[in-house]
Length: 129
Image 1 (cartoon, rainbow, N blue to C red):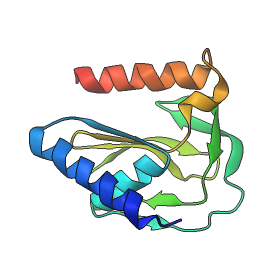
Image 2: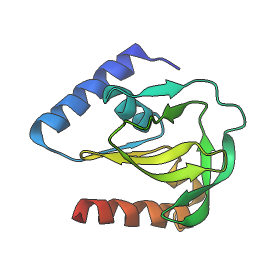
Image 3: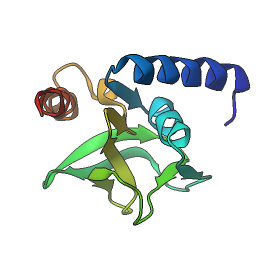
């Protein structure tokens, strides 16, 4: 969906973070906003992409809660790393130039979930690189 007010605020915050060199993490809609702000495009109305799907991150396949109907379109010429794909080969975990876009919701599986642990471990690793 499009929310011009939210997009205006989100893009403003991304501009500020980039200007002062802060790393940025976007989850779900935030991931999509980061991608669009960086010049990427989204596929709209992805069917069957909600509930729990398996996402492979760094070769480990884990179930993750998802409820989105858009997907980041990654082209061969895009200077990014795709770290995770859904069962449907849709990019779910992307990283580029100080940005991490994480489509699934790490908070939806409970506080001790495998997904949540992997999310925070992955963020720690990226921050130390």
